[in-house]
Amino acid sequence: MSLTHFAEGQILFREGDLADGVFRLLSGTIDILRELDGDPILLGSVGPVQFIGEMGVLENRPRSATARAASEVQVEFLNPAEFLEQIASSPQAARELIQRLCQRLREADDRIVNDERRSGRAHKNLKVASKHTAVSSVQTVFLAAKNPWLQQQLQARFELSNLPFVIGRRPTAEEGPPLWQPDLTLDDVAPFRLSRNHFMIEQRDGAYHVRDLCSTLGTIVNGEPIGNHFRTDDAQLQTGDNEVIAGGSDSPFAFSVFIA
Image (tube, rainbow, N blue to C red; front, side, top):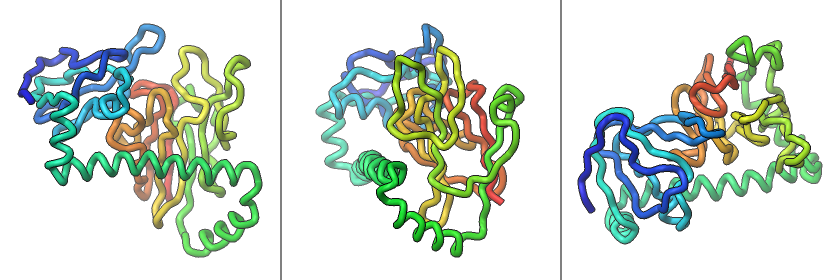
């Protein structure tokens, strides 16, 4: 392993590069970007003590995003063998990686359950679960647009009475239907910021959460980026107003999720 410094604006690796190692950020901030029709889209930023690029090494696949220094940064670079050795010798590093992989497994399980729900095969059981949820919960969740552009499609705040609630983009004729039928389908124009299944609002363990559904450009919840390129796909919502941005930091798909 080796210590390396990058000046602000320098590129650690680019989307499509060979995943030849893993970076562990020691100081500074790194922006994660993807290209959309040749334009860089900022998906979010990561801070110290995070691994960057570990999934590409584990899956032996090319880099799925670009990492750029947002400030002067110091990183530790580990080749694949050194990364696996550190995971084996560091309980904390191993725990972080296991949590990430467990998140993926849970997401796969959730897809199976929601496929059953949406096909109607689990309708009876879900009616019973919803009845108990209504008794135990005193909170109400509202969804609204946060900017005039989105208000053209989402004109009024409305209550999310049935959870989980999936938000996604209307597919083009060439794409076909998404895996799940969204509860809210919105229009977008190319280059698309919103994925056909982008994010879900759900209730779990007595709290409300936003889960990114393997979207192309990720989701930002109260300033925290989640999705394929970040540590987690899940963010817990707080009581009161929450900001959820789908499709990059400057995306027009900015929502208010209010928990009363």
